Image 1 (tube, rainbow, N blue to C red):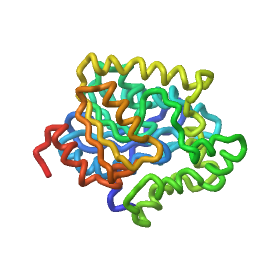
Image 2 (image 1 turned 60 degrees about the horizontal axis):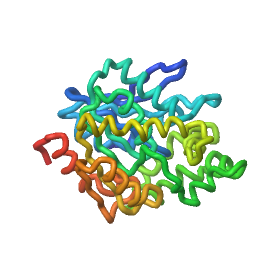
Image 3 (image 1 turned 120 degrees about the horizontal axis):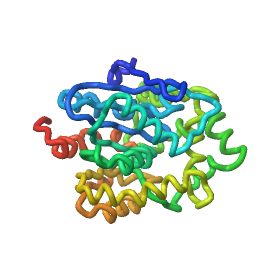
Length: 287
């Protein structure tokens, strides 16, 4: 077991499949929503830090982490939002704050715009919840017919490169091992490839309408004056500064911090740097 990820596992049965989640601490609820190709492990330091004052819930999306990895499944944005909604409903969560990263932005904000009355605060970490045509060639390559699936599922050409391409500060061997642990075979990488294929670049894409709904619904978050904290790693080859500026444009009253020396996995590169901002945002008088 990783010394930083020694939490009790919980499982929810959703549509016949097991969805894994971490549920630590008591108090106001903070829901941490990961992206691709990470899992709840990404939030381990956040969980350990905040659980003394909050109830922190960090799920593994279906097909990710310790959740089931069904081979015949609709790995789409809409389905992931539905799963998050069903999980929180099963736990009787009526109020919560969100922390979102990567694909977790669209998924978490998808839940938020449909349930804005339940949302207290939102932390945004290198992500998007709006349309964009920006896609790095290295990710576009993973979407190519035949070769894309072979790269992602056969050669682990997405989760493995992320362990060094998504960070500025090299991560140690054990941490790298744990990031890759749930994605150790063709079968177990099905959702990793599913996320790549679900990027809706054109209007004909099955998830385009869902993303458009989220984008148009962001106004409800602004209208309700839900506090937003944007923490951004500037050395992110995927979610570049343009995405950060878009968040600031959409939410001009948000507290926003841009860190030139941190990468896409901002919690790996600079957790000690951003922790004071989390403390302030969540009104914690701790170091």
